[in-house]
Image (cartoon, rainbow, N blue to C red; front, side, top):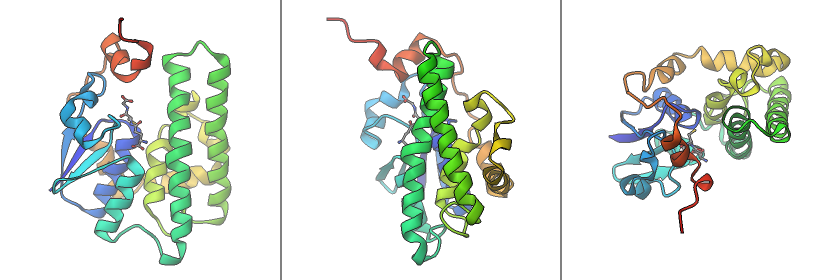
Length: 226
Ligand SMILES: N[C@@H](CCC(=O)N[C@@H](CS)C(=O)NCC(=O)O)C(=O)O
């Protein structure tokens, strides 16, 4: 059975959706990043990058959400779209994994965790908006992100677009991108999305964002004493 290393954050949430959509049996293994469990040597053997999500499939470790989505889609033979659309699938999957995701994360960091730089807040929020615009334009000519088929690219974007209101500090923000909003509502209404949102609700994760958490997640701010 697949072991799914999970924290209730956007990148693991994409994989929760994929596992639900594909009907693959799995066991959820909590890794509490607020407590620093991502740095435990046993977990680092599975993901040397010390972040979530990661999976282990019969002893085979896969880390990084885009790699996991591709691995699971190839394993199950589902949600890759038509063979002729593979170039588009790879392009949009990487656009989300290397653009939308990291810029969204930085926008949250510089608006919620370390909000003392108006320049940084503006830079990352504007980049998130620019990515939404690119997706909105794409969705004006395509039913789903990579093609007219629902694929792992949609699952990847769902994990982050779900937080648009929080990221931009405006719960009505999505009204500015009607195609993106239409797409999000259609993915979010899927039964697998409802199940994916429930993953981890039965687990107890630390919620205090205290010094232990800051040290675990932003170790660069705590240089080792010499
Ligand atoms: N490129 C990675 C990014 C993973 C990532 O940043 N995960 C976050 C949760 S959404 C995390 O584990 N943060 C904990 C930390 O940075 O220590 C992916 O797509 O899986």
